[in-house]
Image (cartoon, rainbow, N blue to C red; front, side, top):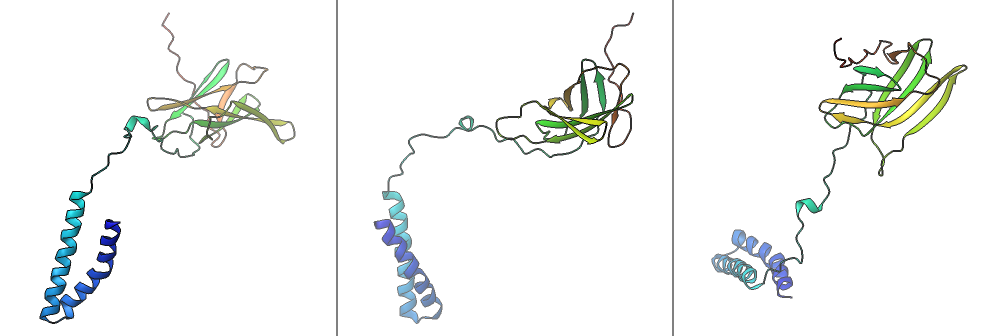
Length: 190
C-alpha cells in the first residue's frame, strides 16, 4: 500500500513541483524543491526497506528448446543426381534449409523431368507422401513430399523411383530443360 501511495504522490506532486520551479515565486520554488527531494528520498528508502523476493525457480537456457530459424522456401537447381533403386538429388544448401522438399517427376521418353521446391513443414513432421496427377492426357506426373538431409553445405533428397524401372533414364531439370549431371561414384580403379 505504501508503494501505491508513493506512486500516486509522484504522479500528482512531481508535475506540480516542476511547474512551480519554473513559474513560481522564491518561496514556492523552495517548497517545490523540498517536495521533490522528499519524493526521491521516500523512493530510495522504500527500495532499501522492501525485501527482494527471489523466484521459486530459475529458468536455465537449456530448459527452453532452441528456436529454429524459419526456412526460406525456394526452388533450388539440382547440382547432381545419382540413379539407382532411388534417385538422390543434391543442391547447395541454404543458410536455413527447409525440412522438406516437394519433388515433381514426369517421364518423357528417356528423359526424367524433375521439379524441386523446398518448403517448411507443419508441426509434427511430414509423412512421406506420393500423389499421381494427370495434367495432360497420357502424361502422368508424380509428386513427392520428402525429407531433406543436409550434410555440410550440401542438401539432398532421396526420391523413390516408381515401378517399372527403365534403364537409361536421363534426369533433367524440368524448369530449365538442362540435364542434371550424374554424381561421381567412388569406385576403386581396376
